[in-house]
Image 1: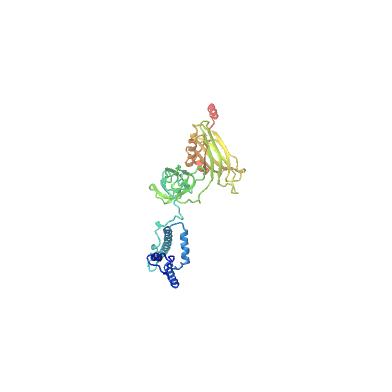
Image 2: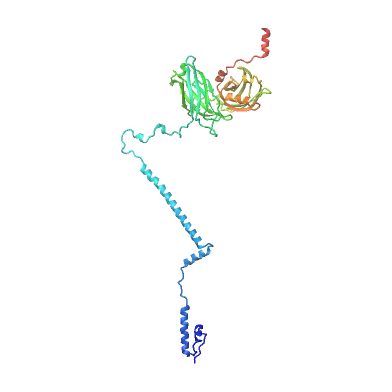
Length: 434
């Protein structure tokens, strides 16, 4: 009888319970075991796989090292690629746009080949009205003026009506314009309009009269200059208008617009400027005049300099009344004085008083020469009237302003001052003996 051991296989052992046991020979037993081992090895063996590519292994390690899910990583890579494509597309579009105008310019070039006749310039030359002269000629504004001559009275009436679109010369893009009017070559009188604040379109409506005969009329030129008023600095000129009177038909009055142009300086006689302050206190009846400084005075000496000093004179009812003078500044055209003078002027007299400021050149050997003058008062023109009015409207407050000096002949002829006011004691003496 053969005996079978169940340790070889549980399945085979379970089956041997129902079958009669028998004992195999040793040779068969060894064959059987080898066969079973070979069959078990075949069934339980694992098929070897090919080893992956090294780059793929590194990429997988990188993916596993990022703390994001795979779908998020793939989305980020896709967005970056799309952004790069958009940038490349924009670069291509810009390159194409730069190249296209060059091609158009080459196509649009105009050539005059084949054009015949003498009017070829009209094809390339614009009309005169279309030419822009902005680089060489600045727009300074326009002025409406009027001219009328009365032959029987030998009077020329010059009207300054209004100005339009004046050039702004200060930082506020506005101006305080006023106009000066005079005749050349005989510049005996100069008139000024009122000052208009903060406007480039002032309406003056002022008329000035010059004594001018018919013979001088045809040789004269009207000069109208528009300035920008400034209290503390030199008044800047906006533009000027010149009208030659020989080209006008005097059978009727003339009124028209004219363009302001850049001023010419060949006929100008500059006497200089002076700065002074005015202060009036009604309660004490004190008028204080402070002569501060002068600049650009006209040279009166051979060496190209002067020895200037200033006279301050009061005239009451067109008669010389009171006067004072400053010290002399040697060899200078820009003297600094800063000297104060106080006059007693009653409140009922202030409206009848004229203040005359004159600059003189001192000469020890000969007579002193007048460099220039300016007068202020209720009947003064232009800036002089404005300064006087500002003093009266601001009592107890000093008002400072620069003034352009005029010729002594012009101021003397305008004022027409008479002799000094007779003293009351002299009048009583005359009445006593008469």
